[in-house]
Image 1 (cartoon, one colour):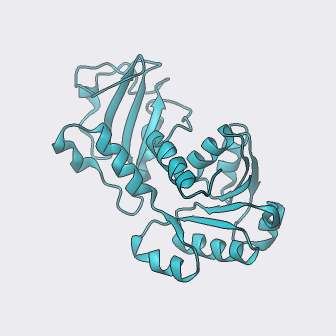
Image 2: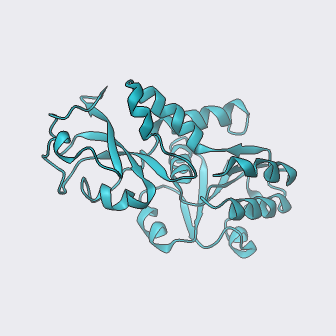
Length: 241
């Protein structure tokens, strides 16, 4: 299947990563040149620098032969316009991410019926990870104001520190630690060692700075639970075969 994804958001990157791993033909459109350069070599997909609301860019992505178009930016207006343009190219299936649930009806009125709010899916995933009720106060997804990111610790100012020495913090929280493939809840006395995998819930505006305290490179394994949930949902709807 020829699938076009507009936007290298958390949702867009995860979906692209999973679809590529499943052998699908994926094209990513992104108007941030830095992001394009960063992920071009990390995904076995065609990455196009440009705006998905530009018909010339859509033509370059071979939209006339697309089976699915996914609008995955964090801007609902851009997603809606791109979805309408894709509809004009007679793409059989159009999927859009939305940040504000109040915009649902506008997308439906435009004939875009497959609408996904990744934050709600992420909240379900976090619920599975967090077993202490008082920690649910940290689930601050709102309108994309926070992200859950899996990262392999490499180097930075928080490496070889005790969790209790760097938390609590107003901008992020370590909600899970993985040892030998097993998920365990973080404890203050745990030392953050190189090679250890952790899950961080972080306010989006501080994400890049916080992650640099643990590693110079970020895995594409962001929102691991979402990957499975989204793919199963798309399969259940018979969008992905």
